[in-house]
Image 1: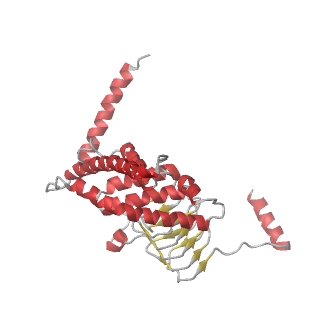
Image 2: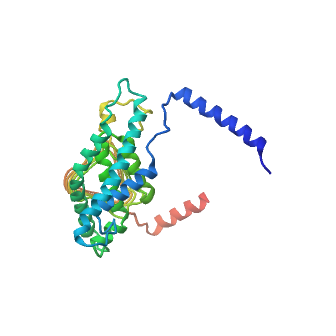
Image 3: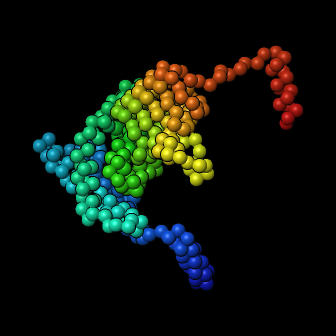
Length: 310
């Protein structure tokens, strides 16, 4: 069975849907949009350059290590340059003036100067995870296998690219980590050194979040905004300062949801499944009310109510 008739009708319907979308949205050419698979290769090469033995699997002589790093960087920078150029070609459709032809090269050069700092920050992140997780046997185990380490490595790279003016490339890099780990960190979020996400699945950190030094999060923590843009009036604060500030040395346990431009003061502890919409002073401990144990008549009354409800 060839389904020739059904294919012809479906092709016609899909063409109509495409044209309707393009006419309504007036979107520009996306044929050269940045490619996730290419950026995945670039991140792999950057990871190898940052950690040639552990992530790059370099097993040669020490004298050859710099050459290995140089080759990985050459591949990574060439791929990044092409993907950044693709992003500029996309944005060109929205711009009234042409971009500088050497802008992608300039961004790659600036990005290259930040890599030593990225490595130093990552070393502090890995050390914080080792200190904070008694189940960890070595820092190597953390770097190679912990989802939180994977997520923060991608974020440190993506954040630099975001700051240099390529938000689409940066977002695609962050989404590579999200797909692998279930940890969603917007590349615009500012995160200090010594950051540790334990377990990690379901963590969400919004674009304008600011996180200080030595902060620890557990799984399913959300640092989000209070109302989705487009559904409510949005002034400058809601646009550019809509996510929480978490000061130094804060621990936020599993399932906590913190929304809006609230500040969690230095040294505070936020308990599991807490819902927060207000500032928390430094040194605070915020937890849910304790469970209530019923006795005697109260317990019998509750059981009777539940039985009647059934």
